[in-house]
Image (tube, rainbow, N blue to C red; front, top):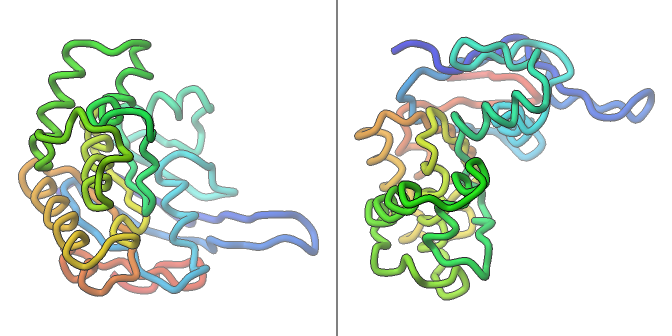
Length: 226
């Protein structure tokens, strides 16, 4: 498999002078196309900062971040926004669904924003994705009427809406009971296997990590094992 994402000597510093805090300290990592990788490490190790940079929501202080052959550390904000919308999906611990929108409206929201309107094609893909995650019977339910596990499955469908090459997930099962967590992880593994979508999943859950093909450990701002 070829490299989808490469980061080299990645540094991220917050604050200045005596208040300066270096969170990433020369981190190196590669993700291959089709990877299903767990990102492990203690709180404060830099996992969330790394995910935020890989999602192009924040730039590193220094180092190199390449995805799909593009050096994203040199890209302007508008180019990063376009790149993110086309190539990267996000799943968070808290699903961040729009409460007054239906499941289907939440799923197609990224495409509606990008295209400026809701299209028939986007609606068809949203319906297909909700069927894929087992929620065809709930697509017209508002987010507030869904269970925690159902909301997270909607969030996964939303992350896949624009057919991204990479999905970054920050503790996606951390707010779920064990049964729901295992169902969500099973769905992620199935999508990874069938569609070759690359997933990087930050987790403290040993069972979730064990279900991934790779385990990448970050300690004190650097990768220490893989």
